[in-house]
Length: 103
Image (cartoon, rainbow, N blue to C red; front, side, top):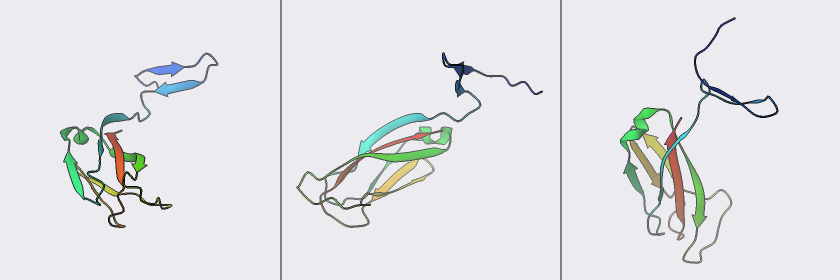
């Protein structure tokens, strides 16, 4: 039997809820993608080097009254310490809020 060092948290029902040998996420920040005119852009965060980066869109809005399309959203990529986005479907007035972090 191998013993590991770390922290384990169990619920009242005895089920393991957290094990520090599992990956846990660290949210580093969030940003909104510009003015709603299909703008591309990027942000830099040195803390992206602390682990494996991830991102997800938490909201899409059409402040100009544009139409929502199924599957519509920004194309997001992370390279090094830079999170970049573009709008592959052009300008329909959409604005996205994106959360990013590492695990």
